[in-house]
Amino acid sequence: MPRPRKPANPAEALVGVAPLAARWIERLLSAGEPPLTLSQYLALRAIATEPLAAAELARRAGVSGAAVSQLVSTLEGAGWVEREPEPADRRRHLLTLTPAGFEAFQAATRRVYGGLGAVLADLPPHEARALTDLLVTLEHVLAGSPPPRRRPPPRP
Image 1 (cartoon, rainbow, N blue to C red):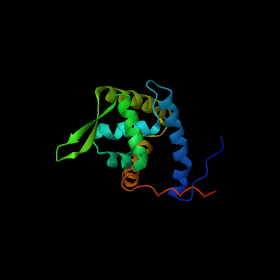
Image 2 (cartoon, rainbow, N blue to C red; image 1 turned 120 degrees about the vertical axis):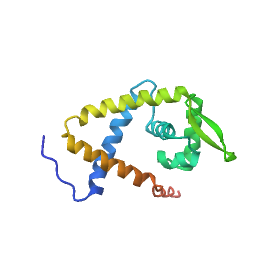
Image 3 (cartoon, rainbow, N blue to C red; image 1 turned 135 degrees about the vertical axis):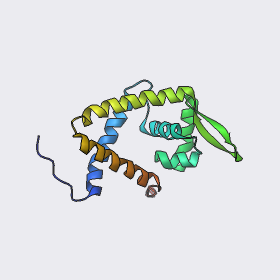
Image 4 (spheres, rainbow, N blue to C red; image 1 turned 180 degrees about the vertical axis):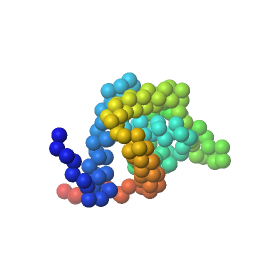
């Protein structure tokens, strides 16, 4: 195997690795039972941490405000998520995992961790810890602000 070229900066490195990691994760998720999309998994992961309003879920799962309603509808239809009135504001609802949703999340997590763990097992322990620390920081940075808006499609 040829020796990898060292990227000029972190953005270049991220551009190289993010699509490859996403492809691995998507395939691991879709091959299991129940099969999940990456967006569904990220939504279950976010809700497993704490009950969330749909707007906060959109931010954490990296989907648009319009897409989050379809995502939540799909998760509700599968019996994985339910809406509960928010105690402080009964007009708002918080999303929580059902027991079936928690089990689907745990099963998917085992598949992802197992599949990626095998690939990452060759990293020296100090590099694996450093990578973990950097990725946790990067996740907080990226989840803290919405991605740039998509350009509108060109008019015919």
